[in-house]
Length: 163
Image (cartoon, rainbow, N blue to C red; front, top):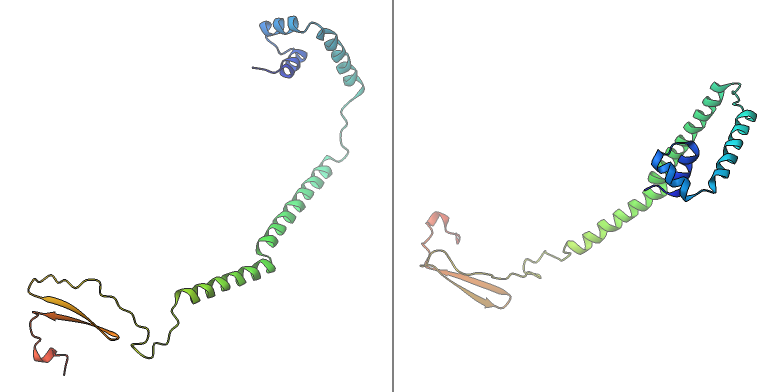
């Protein structure tokens, strides 16, 4: 649906269809005087105002294009300067280094591992075997856990771990 302004402009320009024209003129009979004033003003403007040719149209166009290029270059340079400026890169490096150090100190254990038993923790989760003849037992002794496997075949002498 058209607004009043759209219908009024189309009426002034003579662009309304026959049905729309009749309904618009019956709804707004006082606008006929406005249309007469509009047409009078339009003809006066056409008589008194004439189009002026530019003396150097190429010069004018080249000046406008040069100004557009300068503004585009300035915008590109300032956006690059803001994105990769030295202060931003310095702060980015400081943040990355801080994050790396924080991850290093929180994720990597820092203990003295020269003594193999120092702060060593192990937990036996499961002591069952696939072979039903083999029996596994767990003994907790002072500072050590011993897992005994009974029912295994003997190792050949060349693979014996005691020698």
